[in-house]
Image (cartoon, rainbow, N blue to C red; front, side, top):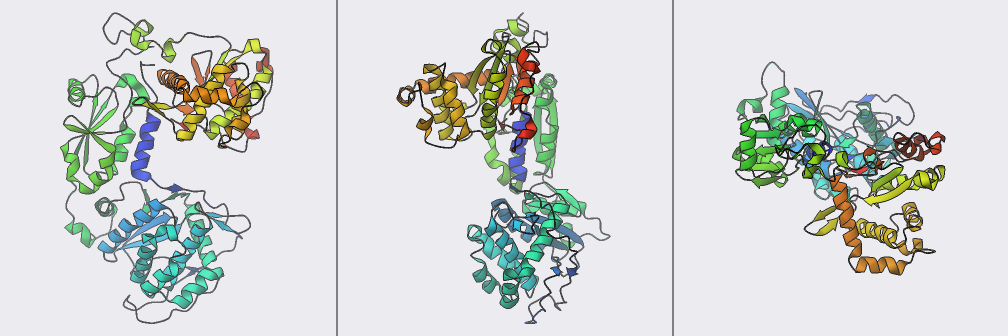
Length: 567
C-alpha cells in the first residue's frame, strides 16, 4: 500500500473503453422464437447494379433476405447495431464512407442487436421504437432496387435518428425505395422474421454492444475514423492482388508515446493494455515504456510537471494523425511539452510506500513512521468488532447492501458489532460532487446530518431511504425521533457539506472509490451486497463471535447481481 494510492486500472480501462468502444450494450437473444429453420432468400440479379425499374418478387414470409453487397466483394465487413443507438448511428456514417471508397471490393453486412423472447416477441435496448426501426432498415434494404438507394435511406433516417421509426416513409420515398414491397415487409410477418434471424446472428456471435464490427472474420475494436478503418482493412486483407484503394493509401504517421510506470506500483501501474487500446486509435503508435528507475522517466516526469503515475504522454506528433487526434483531443491536456491522457494514476513515485519495509524517501522514516503514510489503510489502527461501509446514497448496489444490514445486525449483539456508514463522493474547488448528481449529494448530507443529530436512531432513516432511494419525498422517512427540520437546518447552515467533505477525505485516504466498500476492524476491505456476504467478510476478522455461526441470506436470494458503483 502506498501513500495516497488507489486501484486506478479500472478507471483507466473505463476511460479507454469510452474512447474506443463507446456504445449501447444490450442482452443477446436467448432463442429464435420458434426453432424453425429459415432458409436465405437470394436477391435476383439487378443487372448492372443500378435502378432499372424492375420490381423484385416479394419473398415468402418464411424466407430471410441475405443482407450482403450484390457485387461479390473480396472482403466482408460485418457490423452489428441498434437503430436508435447514437454510437451506432455515428459509426455508420464512417462505415458507409469507407465501404464506398473501396468501390464494391468490401461488402458491408448489417445485423441488429436485440432479444428474441421465449414467446417469439422481439425486444431491444431502446424499446419498441428501436425494434420497428430495425425492421424498417431491413425492409428498406430488401425493397431497394439498388444498393445505393438503401444507403440513401439509411443516411436519411440516421440524420434524425431520435425520430426513428417515424421518419421512415419520407426517407423511403426520397431514396426511391419500392414502397409496395417496403410497406408489406414492415407491416407484415416478413419484417419480424427478418429481424428475428438478424438478432439470432448477432446472438450466435455473442455480440451485445452497438456498434460492433467484424472485419474479415475478426472482431475489430480500433478507431472508427475513416483512415483508421481503411488502414485496418488494407492490413488484414489477404487476397492475391491488393485492393485498389490500398495501393493509393499513404502510410500512417508515427505517433510517439511515453508511458511512465513504476514496478513498485504493481498492477495499478500496468500500461500494457492501455497501450494496446491506444494502438487501436493510432496505427502508427510508437510507444516507449519507462520505469521510474530509469533517469529518463524522472526527466520526463519533471518536464511534464506530473505528480502521479502511471502517465501516458504524447509528443507533438500526436497531431499528425488528424483522425486520431480528433478522436482523442478532448481526452488530452497540456503537460509541459507533452499531451497527457487525462485519466491519471495516483501513485506518487516520490512518496513512501507504506507497507514494503523500505525507506522509499530516504528521510530515515520507514512505512508508517513516515508522515505521508498517516491515515492510509495500511497504517490505520486495528479496531476489533468494527464494521464500516462506504456507499453512494443513490447507488443501487449500495442500497441493496444497506437493506441487508438489518439482518446482519440482528445476528450480532450490539457489543459484537459497531457499525458506521460513510460516503464516496468527490470535492473539486471546495464544492462536492457525486456520481449520481446533485440529488445524491443532497441525500448524502441528509444521512450525515441525521447521524450527527440522531446517532441512536439515524439508521431508521437510512434503511427507509434505501428502500426507495430515488423518491424525492425524503421527509416521509424523517419519522419518530428524527426531525426533518433539524436535518434541513443542518444542510442549510453548511454543516452537512462539512460533514460530507470529511467523509470524502476519509475515503480518499483509504483508497475507496466504489459503493459499497466494506472495511472490517478498520483495516480489511471486502465487498458484498447480501447479508451472508457481509457476515462472511466481517467474520474473517472476527471469527470467534457467535453471530458468525448463523446462516444468513445468500447472494442467490437476490434478483439483482452483485456489483458496485464507481471504481
